[in-house]
Length: 477
Image (tube, rainbow, N blue to C red; front, side, top):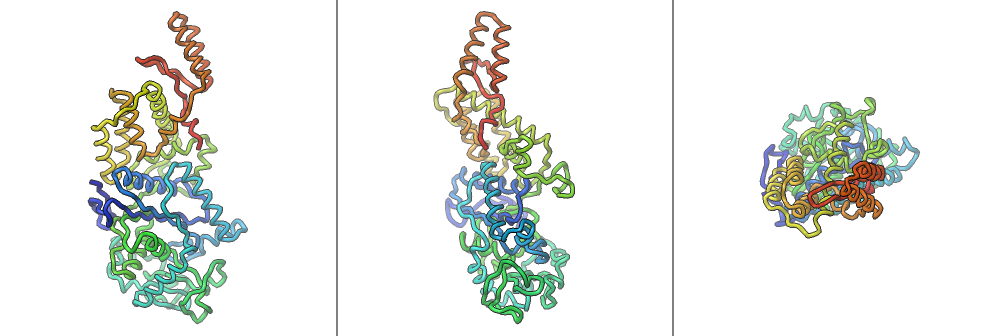
């Protein structure tokens, strides 16, 4: 049975979804004001691996990911400038144009990393009505209150507020005290904004909507939603009041996800999420990514350096989602070599085994045990290598490897579509003939000629076969 580590309880639990054979999953997506770096993209791959694992062990997955295109201030604790407006000012564009630009880049990067598309992609700006309704519900139930500058969630009305983070409230709101949005009428430092009025520091915002909420400073309740309420509104609209799985980075535990739980459960009286799954950070050369250190990389940066995006995916597979991972270019190069080796093996097995194989049962059982243990992909990857290096029949090895790739997502089946040019096979035949005639100098010359064309000859007990030297290059990103 699938076991999942739940951040809320700090334990592994058997996965029991609300609906038999179905799983609902929500991932906190990007704030689309800038290009997503490889640390953000690791989160996308980790979620993809969870979705693929759920599919592999028999669950249909309703997978929702959001785009934050309004309301996420430069501090997670409701202070600073809206990130979308910051991006708009930086590039002389409207927030909507900024969102369109960076959503397109993000989705291209997701495609390059061979991640599956969510069932639903939602943008916060398209859920203003649902956000307003949820905020009104919290006001009506006295879990929220209004000031002239914002509508706040009253954390004192939710005793379990710090259950997820296991920190006291003072620790949760360092730097987010009475000065938040310059509002002296906020009751408690931990209270967070559900709706910002178009007033005070936000008097000149570029994105705003009318609302039923009232402020003495703003007509028609004009303003924009807080970041936290957006995820609750979008997830519950698309997946129901209780979700099976909610995924996000560990940085979301103390503020964003803590606030999501409070407002959602206060509004519905139900458990908001059954399993909280959080992935750890990606470091670069042992340090946190920082523009000042010059160690922030995008997919495009890696491609310009000659690396295939799938090599980055393979690199990500080598660390558990709950473990920190350290990126280096040496590690990425090693991942490139390893993935090329796997692809070469698949090409060779496809040429040497024309009959359809059978999945190796004992290895499949081990693979499933690995992924059912809190999605242990590094262990599953090690089992893939066991199969590659085993003495099992080639056709069975191929069938097993391709089956495992339904979870690993390395596009191994795609390499089977590639046809080695006939002239390369002709060169290989000439080499074989030279060898039969003991003309070894001519045979070596033929081999070098083949290698200059980007291929290599593999001599096996079944004969000589041709594979690409770097088959990863054959997979168009």
